Length: 112
Image (cartoon, rainbow, N blue to C red):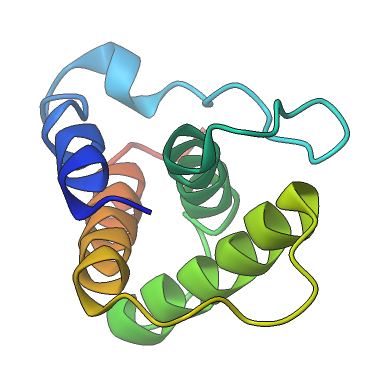
């Protein structure tokens, strides 16, 4: 996964204070995802997982790490990867940064 693509996804996030930034993201489901676009699939999964955990009392770092791990497994499984892919430190850091940003974004939303 390209670190630049993930960084772009992070930068394209909604601005704080924007009411639409608190809306639920489209559901990311493995059955409906389109293989061949791992960066987009990972970004969508991270946002959906962050939204699902928005009201949980989990510290930011473990929450973000868990979301990244879950989504990487889902995207790899969707792509048909049997084993773990070769580690890409830049992509991992970009995914973790995106997960942190997504979790932080949704935690700032008012309770509904």
